[in-house]
Amino acid sequence: MNWIDKQWEQTIFAISVLAVAFVVSRILRSLIGRFIRSAAHKLKVDPTRYNFFKNAVDFIIFLIAAIVIFRSIPALRSMGTTLLTGAGVLAAIVGFASQSAFSNIISGLFLVIFKPFRVGDRVKIGQLYTGLVEDITLRHTIIKDFENKRVVIPNSVISNETVINSTIIDEKICVFIEVPIAFHANVDKAMEIIQQTCLSHRFCIDNRSPEELTEGESVVIVKVISFSEFGIQLRGYAWTDNPIRAFELKCDVLVSIQQQFLKENLEFGYPGRILINR
Image 1 (spheres, one colour):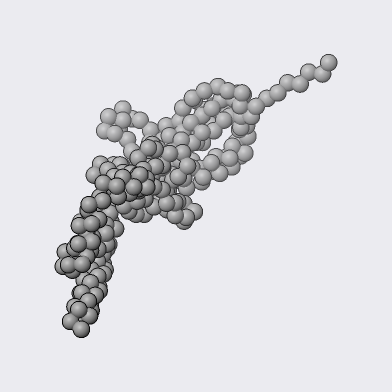
Image 2 (tube, rainbow, N blue to C red):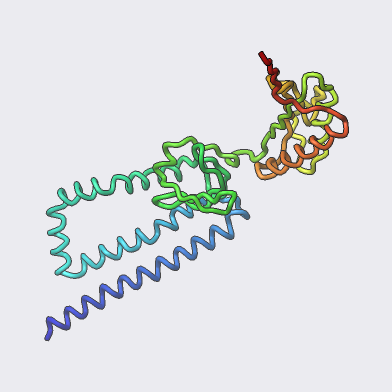
């Protein structure tokens, strides 16, 4: 009878430890999440490391709970000793089976330490994925793309890709407005239309340096960059606050340029072909 009572006590103890671990992990995750939401913008705190820690809280707390249970119950303590005896074989099996998982964890740690991007940054991973960094976990990073889809990328994949970060230092971006015009078109008039259209847009900003201001450089510069089969290639350089506004500026400006070209009878460049019948 005493043996049965002892078994019940050990079972209740193990359940109690797990319940306490569950409650503590929920409380800590809630507190960390609340801290991130309230302090990230007010105190300009980098939320990446806290989000990463929040995702590791469950693992750490339940690992501690498991150690407490194994150390407190004699039967499990002997089982733990048996497991440690075969730790060499177990480590080899787990290591072989979990290479990818450990690679993702180590890569995630490197992402947090070296911070090529943070939660909230606008990034491009390789040639395929572009969007906002929504979360960084032990295994993967979540990117919210511009279609509001979530792209889940393993951390080890990101470590092997080129990362373009549009937010890490300065969000301002120079928009290229490229317009081909016919060889016989009025180049000066076309350049003036591109420049004035960009300047009149609500998202166009003045990003000139003190030296450029002294030299009288224009806010929007337009240059002839090449001659091609399409005609004369013009490029306008307009600055705006961030990539989202840059996309809107470019779309609006191209529509306005097309309308202005029609009014001024300016011809766009297009590839010409000469057909010879024999």
